[in-house]
Image 1 (cartoon, one colour):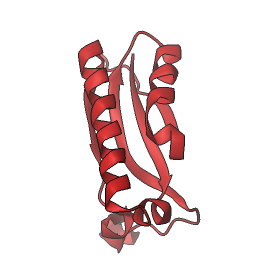
Image 2 (tube, rainbow, N blue to C red):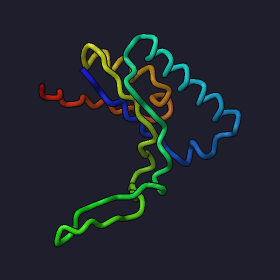
Image 3 (tube, rainbow, N blue to C red):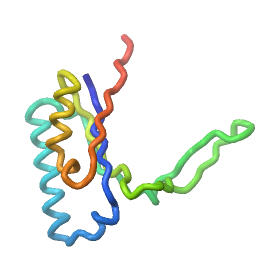
Image 4 (cartoon, rainbow, N blue to C red):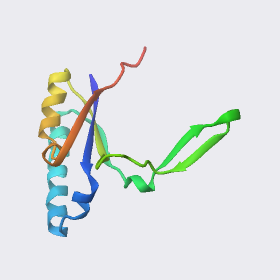
Length: 118
């Protein structure tokens, strides 16, 4: 099964880290990524740019697209990155999520993907 591990964290906490702490955290994510690759489970993943740099797109009245500036979350935690993994089952996905560095400073949402037809 494929699953997305979506890392949610407090951006204010991340932005307050010292450069040394950021470097250490990034090293932990690199090691985690390498572990997934070596286990043969890594399918993709990336760190996301901050939410204020995002755009929201909706189809408005008359079918015209409306583009809004970044999401305005009512929560401190925002989606900061993801890993796409392929593992035997949900239990394995949860075990890998627990190993993710993001689980120590935020939350990691584990969401299975729908199987592709054909």
